[in-house]
Image (cartoon, rainbow, N blue to C red; front, side, top):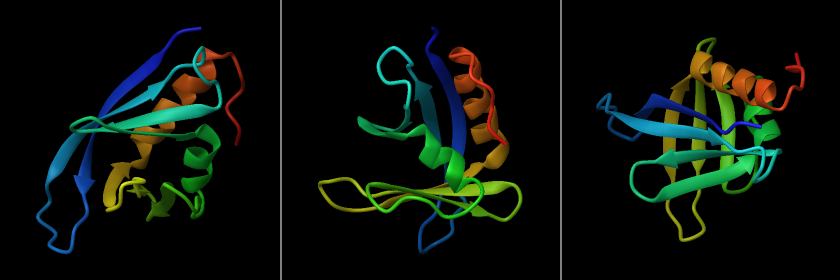
Length: 115
């Protein structure tokens, strides 16, 4: 089983909408944990959470802990990170980037993509 890694640019959502975009990395390692995905923000900040949470959050608000995901219109999704040490980061993805990533994760373990 192959590791899936995909790079994307996300918009940082702040009180002051300056349109700033940052690079992130989406990672799936089925050997490590076939049920989890990882999102890496700039710096050493990685968040590991259930792949199912990412999938559910594209349809309706999901998550109650460190990571929360919800749709934002038809072509965007918001991911909110609450690290254990405090603070909050909120970023907005193109939904297409997340859907491509999820499709690749299911292909990596030869599971059908849920609909």
